Length: 126
Image 1 (cartoon, rainbow, N blue to C red):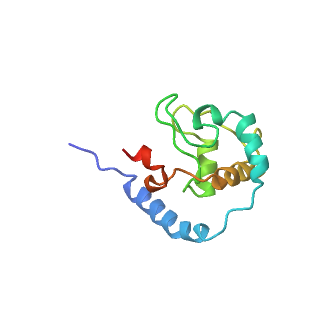
Image 2 (tube, rainbow, N blue to C red; image 1 turned 90 degrees about the vertical axis):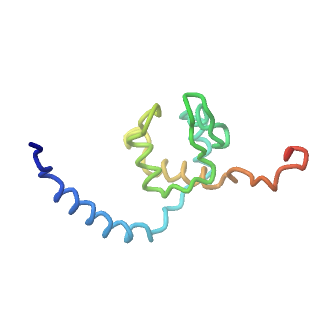
Image 3 (tube, rainbow, N blue to C red; image 1 turned 45 degrees about the horizontal axis):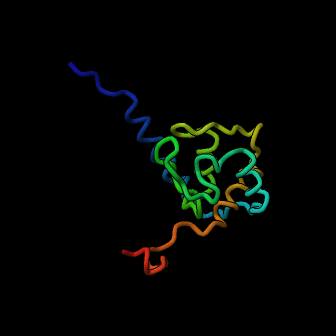
């Protein structure tokens, strides 16, 4: 006989609470960062080694996401830095303070991101 999941109601309540609270935070603008300092950090701490010199992504250790003009909100970007998925090293707050994270975020947001296909020269479209 299967035992009912006793934690299911608690998980549902926590999910509902998170969904109720999250919109209040989503409307808050990200703190302004210093993109020039963010670029220095991007190169200094080695982000470019996997994500490319201008956040274009790559496949060094498997698919690496494009960071240029990321659609991640700052809190998700910070969470990925603090508790990364896959092979990325963790950058705890004592190593990379929140002000530096905001600067990194400002830098990757300042990058143009991938070009649209129609922006490529005609010869590359074939």
